[in-house]
Image (cartoon, rainbow, N blue to C red; front, top):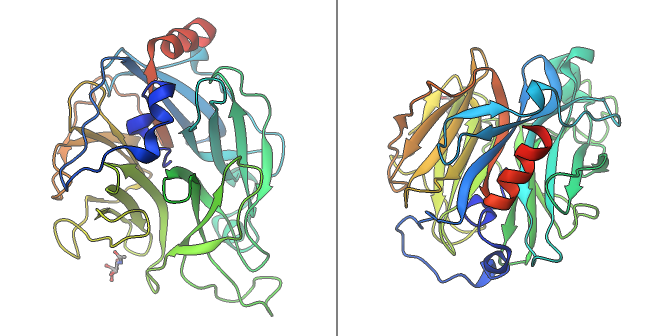
Length: 342
Ligand SMILES: *[C@@H]1O[C@H](CO)[C@@H](O)[C@H](O)[C@H]1NC(C)=O
C-alpha cells in the first residue's frame, strides 16, 4: 500500500504538502512519533469475503483493533468481478482544501474462478475509491492499467514519488506471448509493474519496476523512511517467503537486502504491510499474512538496516484479517470514523 507513505500519511495536511522537500536523512531510520496522531485505521479483506472491512485501533496501540460497522463490509464493489482483495489506503498529498484519500484494490472474487484462470485471463484493472474526508467513499471505478498480454493485475498499492511529484502505483503481473491471445501457454514470471498518476484516473504507460525472473514476485509494499530512504517488502512467490530491501537513493535507486542476499523475514506469509509507529520514534510495525493459517500477525523492528523483526503482542489483534493496509489518524479522523461506524 503501499503507500502513500504512512510516515506522512498522518501528519497534518500542511506538513504533508511539504513532503517532497522534507530534509534528507542519513541512513538512520526517519522517526515518526507525532503527538497529533491518536490511532490507526486498518483496511482489510477477510478470507471468504472479497469486500473491504475497516478496523479501528484502541487509541495508539498499534496492535489492538476492533471492527467498525459491527464487522459488516464498508465497501462492496459492483463493477468487474464484484470482489475486491488486497485493499491499500493511500493518504493523498495535497493541502487541506485539496486533500484526498484513495483506497485501491485487486479486482478478484476467487469464489467465482480458479487461481489458474485468474492469472491467465484475470482483470487488468484496479478498483479505486476516492474520498475527500475518509468517511464518504462513494462507489468505485475500475481503471484498466495493463495491456492485453498481461494475465492479471494483483495487489495494487501506491506511494508518493517525490522525484515525479506524482503517485507511483505498483502491482504484480505475468505476461503471455502476444501470439497467445487466449493465454493458454506458459507466462513469464510474475514481475512488479508500475505507472505514475496524479489522480488515479489516468495513468502513464505501465513499465516493469522489479523483475526477479525466474523467481516470481508479488505483493510489494513500500515504506518511506526519510527523504531518499525507503524500505520495500516483497513476497518471493516461487519460494513463498517475504523479504525486505532498502534503498537510500530513492525509489529508483539501488536496493539491497539488509541481512544478506538470502535473508527473509518469514516463510509461508504474504501481503506484507509496514507502518511507522505513532508514539515510539523509529519503530516500524509490520503485518504478515499467514495465508494458510489465521491471516495477519504483527511484528516490529527498530532497525531497518538489519533483518531484525520481533513478534509483537497479538492478544488484541483480530484473527483472519487478510492483506490490507493501515493508516495513522489524527483526532478528527479517529472521532469521525468512530462516530460513523463505531
Ligand atoms: C526466491 O526463492 C528461490 C528459491 O529459494 C530462490 O532461488 C530465488 O533466488 C529467490 N528470489 C528472490 C528474489 O528472493
